[in-house]
Amino acid sequence: MDYALYWQHTDFLTRSLFFILLLMSVVSWCAIVLRVLDTRRLQKDAVLLLQQSVSGLRGRMQQLLPDQRKSVAEQALLRQINRTRVESERGLQILGTTAAVAPFVGLFGTVWGIFHALHAIGQSGQAGLGQVAGPVGEALIMTGLGLAVAIPAVLGYNVCVRLNRKMLAQLQDEAHLVLIDQLLPPASTSTAPNSTGSQT
Figure: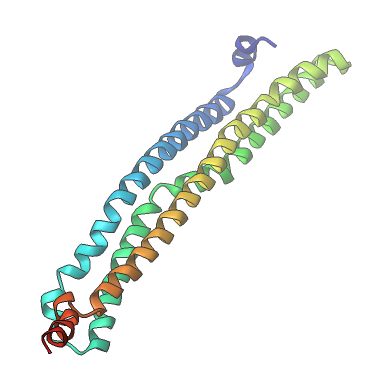
């Protein structure tokens, strides 16, 4: 199939749909790469941010009762986890929209191309297989382009969502460890009875 000849027979709408699909493909690939890199950065920084969110309140929480101290620490950890979740979901809307819209954009281009092909066949008066197969096959290129844009977007979306779930699960575990560390008494007070017992 001569794609240059196909491009010459396309109209303004078909070319516009082609460039829209091309733009969607470039944006989705950029979103996939940036999202994966940003998720790796969040994995490195999120644990430190969790610890800092509680350690900054440690001096003020010493005056509270244990139940109050636990509630304050839980709220601080949940707030930081929610911030990380929101930041980890940036760009996923682009991938989801591209995965959902691109096949329909390609299908619309195919329908529009078939319409023009049948219109040209009707004007020429020749409706043989040789006259129909070429224009219809060329029109189906838009469906293939739509799928070529949508499939990587779907795969990238699933990969990013899986990475985010894994990261948030690790953050939940780390948050429990930080909370336990806040509720346990200092090591010096726990060793005091042992030292007095050894003297007696």
